[in-house]
Image 1 (cartoon, rainbow, N blue to C red):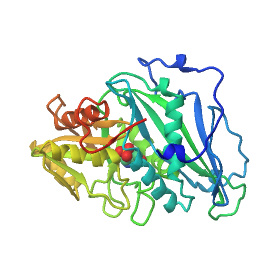
Image 2: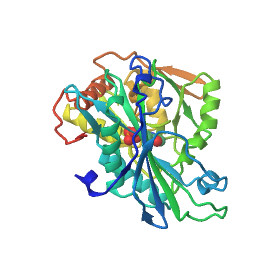
Image 3: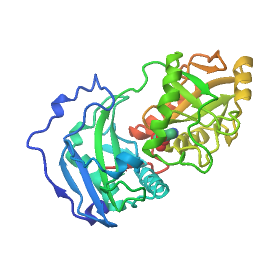
Length: 355
Ligand SMILES: *Cc1c(COP(=O)(O)O)cnc(C)c1O
């Protein structure tokens, strides 16, 4: 087991705060577990990782990441399965993607022993924070930032890697209405769209705010060059159901390669659906909603799992999608994914990682 391969310095809390967790009333990203992991990379050398009581960290005003944005993260989840065991879902994929993001942002590579071992140790300590309940989980947030105290523009020599954990419940209460964005862009070819770097999310806030002022919850991004092809939505990949078949944009340097996306494609094929990864043109989908051949459009990502959209706004017009029921493709796939994670159905692809 990789977790045993290195030492962790552990400083436990005197008293757990787990009584602050109310599984019936979880507000995303507001409550954090008892412990956090801190590991520093100093001039290319990883120091002994430490597990500490969750709390503030001190920073110097010249901290490089605050100025030039060398900062990346991952988002993943731990679940309590039907046998009351704590499991993670495909964590090695998050580990690999984290280092892909690190490479693009010219940051240190994080060793597997620290990333995977840190998750393992934290989940052992904060096991009681993994909530029960159908839509509940413990959200895991590994992240890393440049920690040089220096105002010149160059890659930092020092990095801090951390993991914090926060209980999560249902994400959107109602199916969101989304707007097709044809003016602003999220990512361009040759850019950093495939990296989970902090700046991507900062850049998306303004166009998302304008859409919210128009009554939309979220954006559907189109390609930077022509604005004719779908890319993804907020922090989700997107799927379309047309004539009963599943379609999703093929991945490129402008699209974040979602682990949920990959899992849903596999589950859909296992269940006998036809799935294609291809260019998806806005005009084809709008036509399809009008003539009834497009019956579902949904987002897919760790935070939301599967999120069917109620309507799509395009050039000032709203195109309403049929209501979702338990036979809808998105519902079947969501259940398929949840059943594997919860241990209700067999883990035939080796996705579930027991802590
Ligand atoms: C994280 C993220 C996704 C979803 O990835 P998952 O691995 O499924 O959580 C999709 N798009 C963007 C932009 C993201 O940041």
